[in-house]
Amino acid sequence: MNIKQLDLFKEENNLISNSLCFFDPITSYLPDDFVNEDGSIKGDKKINVFMVGFDDINEELYRKLLINNQFVTPKGKSYKSLLVNYYIFDLEKRRSNSYLVNGIKELYSNLRDNRKDYFGLPEKMNKTKFVFEYLEGNSFIDKLNKISKDKDSINFAFVSYGSDYCNAELADKIQRRVKNIKHIYVNAHLNRYLEGVTYYGDYLNKQVDLENILVSVNNAYQNRQTSIEDISRLPEIKIYSNYFQAMNLKHKYHLLGYDFVSKEKVKESDRVIGEEEFLSRFNDINSYKDYFKASTLVAMIYEEHLHWNAEYMCYGYVPMTIKEHRFEGGKIIEQDIENHKHGCIASYRGLDKRTRYLHELRVKTLNDKTPIFSKDGSSLEVYKYDFQFLKKSYKFLTELGFVVVEKR
Image (cartoon, rainbow, N blue to C red):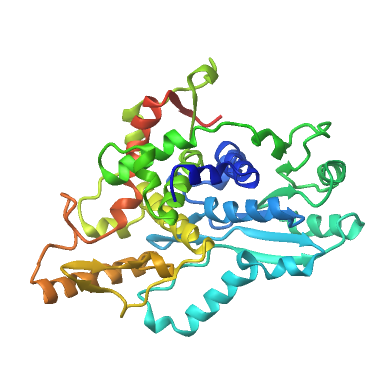
């Protein structure tokens, strides 16, 4: 991929889906009683997403929603993934056989059949049900009401199945007749008579700040100043990874009770958050054991790993087996980009097993006894990569002209 190929992100469906997930993620609408102080989601809550129609734009949005909407919930003294429920309504049977819907399910099934070959299977990224349904009938509305009636659920609809007029009419019907719908996103460029909805078309020509944030994310990972030219020379999946990391930043800030807006959009009623207050939300990691204790930082690390897994798997990557991990020429072989494999596609605890395995292998092969955990960055553990950009984000956001505020 080169700089010109970065324009792929500006292809219509990509531009709309990326911009919408960045500017108007579903976390914008999560009420306070859904989210714990540490940014995890309360275990009795349900998040339901209705994909109303599964045309090309909704399929691409579904991919970005899978990537962007990874959550954790408390489990004992640690966390587990909280799966978003997706209900895809469409009449085209071939759409149900797409890789994102059926292929990923088959991948999980194959991994389970061979689980002994891996450090720890990646957690499921979602719960999806494909429903063959005539969208203009009453039974469709009845189904939405039945699913969304749970008082502990929050429900979102993404409507794109026909013409602007048909989409707007159906969105209007959902808005009027589905009792517990929190927010509707609709693919209607011309019919704008609905209030309180998000229009896909608003993001078609919106020049997002993602590219600047993308460079800042890469700087955080590389621990040095980089440029868009540097990023363009990375393998395609690593460009995507940086891009979606940038796209996911508002999502994380919302879970922490914050947001960031450009300076000119700050209101008098906004409570501006200083860097010291922002950083005070995160504990220090002083030992390897700290990665397995419940805290705000660990909740964000866990969630980020789920998010990273989803990025890779949504673009066709699979885990590397234990046996494929090895040392060659004094270097760890832990990924195979050419064959779409990566060793870090694993469960949160699987990363720990992988780290310990590589540590033993390094001692045995190289007589290198560098400890598993060290604060100078020389360790083999990878959890550190999943929080360092977040802790650095306040500084680079303010340098880019944003102001961090309490979530409105």
